[in-house]
Length: 176
Image (cartoon, rainbow, N blue to C red):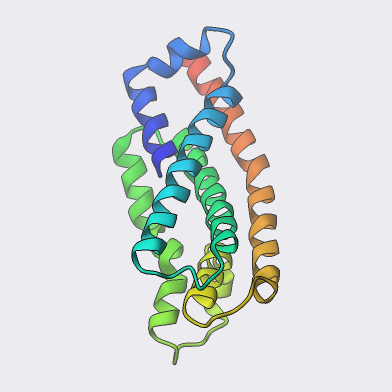
């Protein structure tokens, strides 16, 4: 949620207003914040997998999965950061929505629960492939269907972020 925190912080300090009066557009700001968040998340994910020796012999597959998951979460973070009026609202939303993000993990820990439920949550489609490769020894071909669904979720989030960005720009313009 680095993009969310960064956007909310800049809105509260009014530095986003200052940036947007230059030729810089909101889309430029979002691409920069999103790219940094994705890069940081992939590096941290790769470090975590390396420390746990959990690549399952498929370094590039895991890197791809982490990239897709990082893009998805960066998009969610950007939408949240543009929507939230302040830090309190952002953290409340993160706490309330946090269960949805980690719900698939609960079903891995308790395999007796109905396994169709976590498939309703978008994060399942990048968390499950990581688990399947690291623990179950699956191959890239085995996880491609889940990864394609994750990519579809990422593509579907782009118009949402664009819409929230336009809404946010209008809100900023009204306060100036």
